[in-house]
Image (cartoon, rainbow, N blue to C red; front, side, top):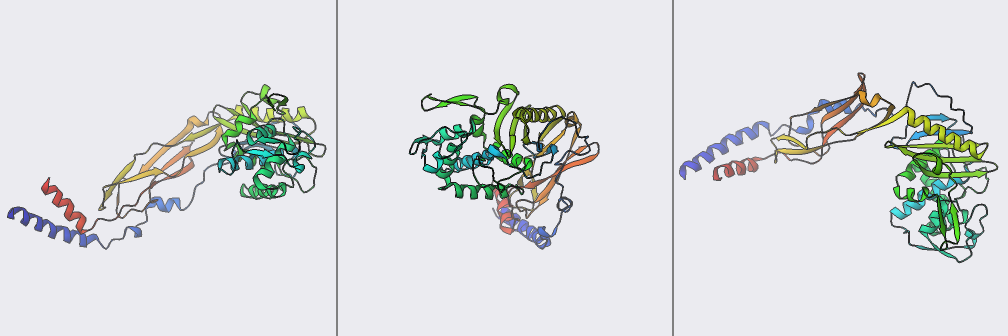
Length: 405
């Protein structure tokens, strides 16, 4: 026993000397080459450049095609021109409805009582009667399928107390989404108002956000349905649901001032596209414009969505534990020309070990995506936990355990 005590004391003296020799080193003063590199920033490619714009022979005052996961603009004509949107306004209305449902503010089973203001709406409607009660589910179906104005107002009042307050929420949400060229004065788009306007691009942003609530697709893909126990039929105004492969939304619109409008969404081969046209001369022109933009997108581009494989952790030296968990700080999501996805090179650089102290979020490596020697995106590899530096007690306990085992 005396022999073991003597050995332990000797080790304690050695450890004490070692700890004092490196205790003054502050890990926070060591800036890795990775941290310096990433401070320069690299956001990757977000737009498709150097591609000759196709001649699609389509008609509309404002047009845009974007890929939904990245927001990449694939085609546009006057995408930022301020124009009346007619009932495509209801993309914003449905977005606020879905947000209220997802946040638990309202539920699909809520009973909504039709007000005098709601039943006064003209245009397309389900002919709500004053005091009539329907569920949120039924009214949302009436908004998404035939574009019922009375149903939209009833839901707006149920959420916000009044249409005026609901419109204030619409405009706030528009600003939050970067819809900088939009202003709404009602939740239906029924009334032509010079202060009620948006752009093809802004509506694409709103549609993109609406798609983040996948439950809405259960409504926007309905072709035929009914209300009031089958007594009132519903037919979808988006005729592309029956004719365009992959079509899953979103909203049509028409007034004399706005012309024929459509925000159309379609999904093929894991790529979700959004095509918006405002101010088409005829109903067929808007469907033709959206179809051709979608055809162009699906035939020309593909989406890369990739997360590189990295180890779960790396070694820690001089720490209270000997491993630290790590993760990729982001994933690669981008639109490329068809076939280019096969040209992507993935280069992973990661430290074998890191010296404590380690802070959560510390950069320890990188994954670089390249195409033809051009860097597309660099994603940091970071720690996801904090590891404190080992002290004298930690070393002593560790040695003691080794002797006692």
